[in-house]
Image 1 (tube, rainbow, N blue to C red):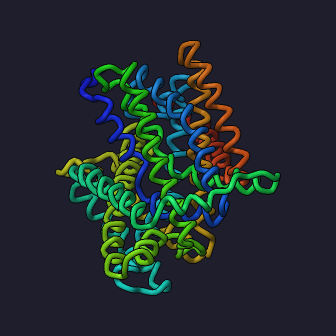
Image 2: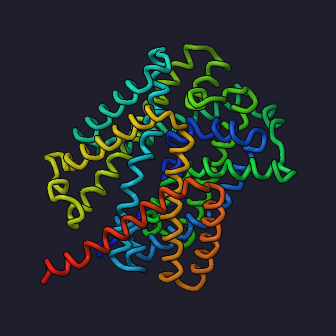
Length: 420
């Protein structure tokens, strides 16, 4: 097993945590949560954060003990066998049917502001964005992570600036604590959307073993980073609620640009839209390449045709990228033609990740020591609460996982025959 380079300190770890969680979600989730929970949105974010933290630490412990590029599927495989590991891989891939379309539509919404285009151009702008992302991914993505980090830092600076010009102190008057049963129901169901912010928490698993002093520095990095992320989101929740730049799907997608326009003028709004589009583009590009690497890995394992495992001269799995691109384009078209709300796609994606996180927590109760197993049990309870809030959007995840398990069960005897 290759050893990780122990080079990270708490500051670098905090920066990595922030860039993991701040992406396209920053542009749409605050407005969506306010549209759904109203003045209770502030508490909905705090509740979601409280449920996420134990899950993050479970992945941190798993990553420190079993460092692997396979992430969640690797841990689940170690606990329950290769059939479950491959089934989780298929579940990850099924997210392509619902997940990337949301991020791409958010990017297209800001592109519409840049070109002053109407809603009827959204499908075309989404397709244009997707084609650009595919070309970017195939030509080379090595610098995009550093580029995205720079853009995220600029976005955080923008949030701080908005807090000053938007009178963040006055906006605190919109906070209202849920009291009645109906208030709590409205608050808790908003967590089903907010959970999107924390997708990718499994990336934390790869960080633990890279710290100079993991026992001290990693908790600081994780808690410090999540605190900064929550502060950024909560600030936007207050500002968007106070200045009322939320409403329907398009308004929510463009909420930050509308907020900038309301506080300054249309020129600044367009400049902000350019920055927002760039960060969304880079974020989705990494998302697409990550799925492509998964397709490549599954092709190497024999679950997909071998041609998807081939690398280009740039070290990119070009055919896997194209496959992911075609599936994503179909997803974008379906989301536009069906007329289904973006919230459905977000919650369905959340359901798939939540099932994967729950399975990883169960695996942790078998793989980790006694103290960590207690934390894994708490994290599993958090997952259970989130399942209740996400509700019927879990059906897609459950169905995909059952089909994947059945498929791997059917394939297993054939693989044994081939080996013999």
